[in-house]
Length: 119
Image (cartoon, rainbow, N blue to C red):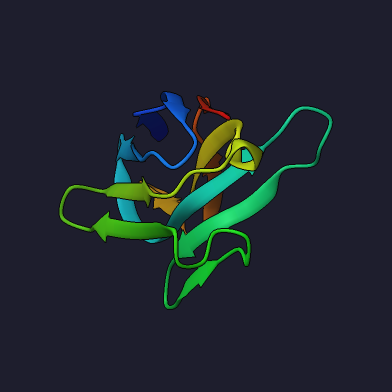
């Protein structure tokens, strides 16, 4: 069974930085893409950054956040700089993964990690 486990959330002051990490484990054939979404209270879950054939960023984080992947370790990281109070949310790791004994891509989510930016 495939699992995504996030780490690195926490509380930081505005202007500060945090680094989120996510590791995929289990019986994995291949990982097509990995990325990050976030959900603030009362709002829908939204894309933050995604890395597959191309890299995509939400307009609100361009120039401040950087996504990186280590394909050998099945990990994805999100370096978040110049954080703003509006970045406060639960951040979820997402992976498009082909698990062992399957032929199609499955969508997996981590449990989420809280990021709180104080003003």
